[in-house]
Amino acid sequence: MSESVTGRPDNPDALQPIPALRGREREAAQTLFGERLPGAEKYVEHLCTTGITHGLLGPREVPRMWGRHVLNCAVVGNELPASGTVADVGSGAGLPGIAMALARPDVEFTLIEPMERRVDWLDTVIRDLGLDNVQVIRARAEDVADEVMADVVTARAVSALKKLIPMTVPLLDDHGQLIFLKGRTVQAEVDAAQKVLKRFRLRHPQIELVGQELLEEPTTIVRIRHR
Image (cartoon, rainbow, N blue to C red):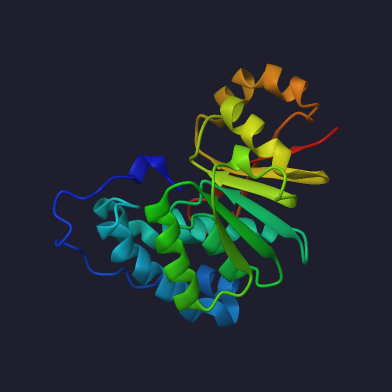
């Protein structure tokens, strides 16, 4: 989910053309999605149409839907363990969960989203894309710790680390890792989360850039493991 672009458009009928894949973005999409590229294109169509009218993304995001959103998320799929399990907290429009699920059909994804409107949209998109490696749970992360245990827990633009860590660590397997997609203020978030990191006995976060060989703007992630 991306909070910075969430909100209903003032004029939902004024939808912009769905962006076409060109140049370096097409090459990246072909590399990341392979034979599932048509599914990724259909997903972008959903994001640029019903995703806008449902208020999951703002209309200004349409021209940069591939680069800033879908590819930005999908490239993190390369960081997931083979045949692993992923819990995506606060999935919203399926970013990063659906994008990564398209890129990694060998991995099982659980999308956790508390808002009914968003869950209904996610269910519709997943059915339309024919994704058999994704399920959606309508709940807050804090309420499903007894039923979800994942190798990796992901989140994008849900909250700052000091709030995000307590809600996601209970979903994590003892040998798993947290992988959060973050922005330019990530170091400040790490600095502010030191007490929380110690409380949950976590290693010092690793800030990494992924997708440098594929994307014009690589994705910043924070990787956190148990001690």
